[in-house]
Amino acid sequence: MEATLAALAPRLQLSRPGPLVPVLPALEGLLPERGLRPGAVVSVTGGATALALALAAAATASGMYCAALGFDGLGALAAAELGVDVGRLVVVDAPRERRAEVALALADGFGLLLLQGAPVAGPVAERLVTVARRSGCAVVVAGEWPGARVRLRVVSRAWEGLGQGRGRLRARRLAVVAGGRGAAARERRAELWLPDAQGAVRLVERPTAAAAAPQRRAHAGRGPLVVV
Image (cartoon, rainbow, N blue to C red; front, top):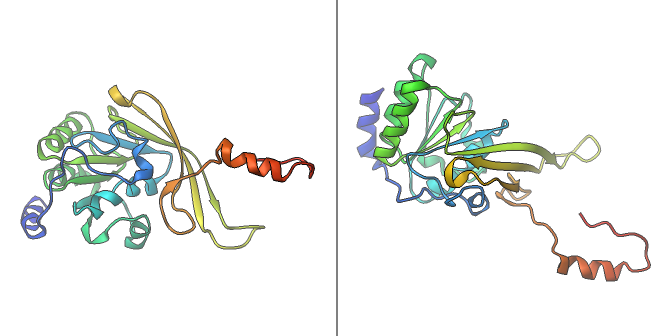
């Protein structure tokens, strides 16, 4: 596996990230530096593999190659719908007993590494972070990771479009809470469309007081107005 990756890297001309790996504008507010720090781990919990994939969208669009390890059944269409450039996404499968060594090899060759669950633990986990820091690789784990610098937790999610028990799923709404260590310790919250009805990843917009005022005047004398 290591030899194969070593041979693949020059041919793909794998790019190295700058100081930060970019993320979509809707996700910037969840991260203390508004991007992914190479050599640091971001964990995503709450059953939202889609959020982990969305974190790779801006990176691949900028020309960076991303490796995904352990995502059984990950489809290119699902990744593409979240904005990932699938031409720069390498999905790697490996037996569970070899995932630790494969993760180390990937962290040494790619700008962004997505892991499903935590395939490494203890000293090997520390080594992975060391390799990622040295090589300039940001790591996103879909699952728990002890010592993660940033933790993103999906606390609620709902699909829209079904109507009265029938219809077509058109948009998914997520509420995400962010925390972590150091600069990430201050809790952050965001509501996201992941995706919206047009397939975009964006923040859920809330009506401002100025926007709500004309509605209240227009409904004056017509019964109660509820603004959500």
